[in-house]
Image (tube, rainbow, N blue to C red; front, side, top):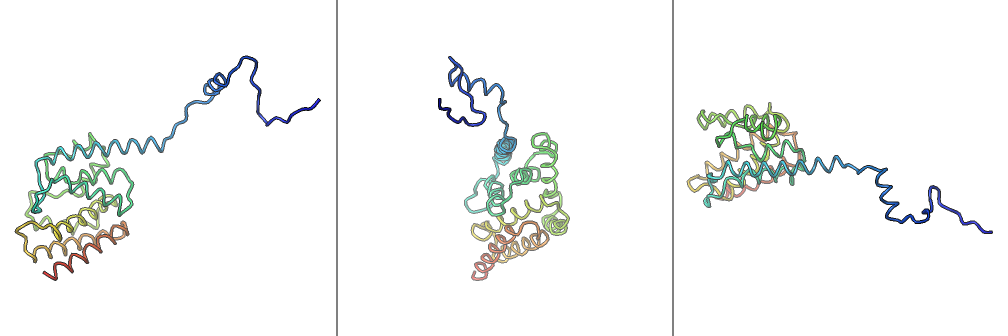
Length: 222
């Protein structure tokens, strides 16, 4: 009589046992797998979408200063995209703060409201990059440069994105009444803030340097 080798652990079905029955019994002994990293990513995406809806609602009556008066929400969306694409940033707190970074400064949103919706860490970063609007514009600009070296890494990343996107508008779509001199001054001021944030994200800093060099060349040509 010949015997056929059987793979270790391989068992023949008992009479009347179907493949479906065996599979069902196997699933009973092996709980459904969990994928914590995937679940965390899904949660982050859902929270980012909530933040986008929140910011869009808060900024819904605001417009940018460019000639087309584009919707204000374009700015935080673009800043967030810069962080993700140019800077390779994946930290959810940083990306949420980028979406929400102007809500306290430019709308009726309160820090407590942000914390209730998005957590204490997001609130802290947004507060770091929020200006005191009761101060004159020049004083606010001076304080941004002064405070930039002392910001957290997350807040510096948001600053880098903000101070990269805004110069792009000033270079290519400036407010109608801005003179060349004022546009050049804005680029110089942005460069001072970025200089205070260097060492945070080389890719973002390189991107800013490219924007700055091109902008200065265009504005020098008049």
